[in-house]
Length: 428
Length: 95
Image (cartoon, rainbow over all chains, first blue to last red):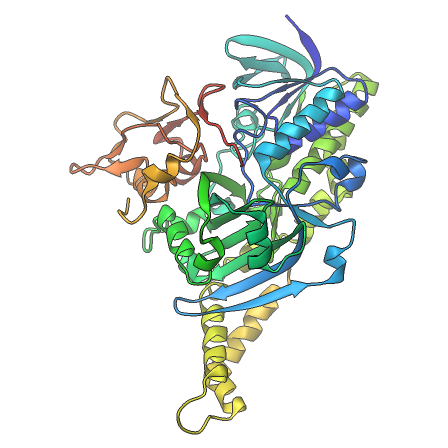
């Protein structure tokens, strides 16, 4: 029977980030992955922000198989009959180092696993971990396919549905209010067509976010990212909202309705859908975070609930990579002290607290509550859409003055509600 | 599930490796539990349906995207939920 310094469950960004760092420091690391290959079960919307993690993995991102750097951001408010869009582009987005990239995980994770293997990590795919081995109150390995595999420490990086951290007693059963469901299609399209359609040059990319009617006024939205030769198009909806008995939603229908919107059809015309996927996103934020470590075990990435909705974007992959890195640092410290108990490994949480990972979580902890206000997904898109409609309308007769037009849509009562909403937004 | 979405065609885009033992099962006696009803609408693969007796049925696990939404939406009191065995189930080529 083999014994390793560290066993990591899950070859996603957290697991591979930890493995890469540990092996780079000379530890014997085994990564177990249940998919056919690293990335086979992993989904992102997707865009990764590189700035927060660039220094943790020096030189790594320069050669990474990322898709396009995002040079154009667009936010669209949608109602049933119209939409209003805001586009942002700037030289700062075109200059290197680029802050964010579109990404396809099957490709990226496979490559990252190869980089980890070059550092000496052993990655075994097609293996499902069934349980932890607990001896004298300490996690001392995992059970996989009837085999007992032992290590000084286990790192659970088994994703948003971390059965392993539940089995280790670090997390209770997840609650619907803390999670959103994302469904997505990858649509292949010629890169030249993408550049023309989205007004991009070379390897520039676009990131679009759509809010309002797409989720029938509920928490969530639509997204579109340009990859090199494909588009990632999808819808995210809060699970609690989707299963609301008074107004339940047929989730697969949302994506079809989104695709048939006049704002979207010309963008995907001529493209072929090549993959359909679904994934859960932790959206509970700071208040929903589970425990990060126990005796002989650490939890990182989505498994630890480390994703964050900050309003105009959802981040997760940076937290996965960084938490993997800090978990590795904690293990290296524990190895120095030859002790892997909860207290020694607890330095992990301290490292997370000192970094952007938990600072972001804490700073944006009110976001889930603020965004649960349905007015953001119904009233505001309606109001702004109607206002634009009347501002731009030129009737057959005389046109109404602008100020009365504005006041027609924004009454005193409405203004008061907006002030109240704004007060909530100020918590973010 | 609504007829407007051809989920079979969508799932046909994906690579699946056969799952020998279904990894998600409705717990015996729980078929009529109201908590299961949400799975019929929310499952992105449309694998759950309700029969004329008011029972929720998971006729096949083929096409399961392994997202886990049903586990979170319905709970483990009504669903016996696990990941499929290693090297089986959906294998994403793009992700």
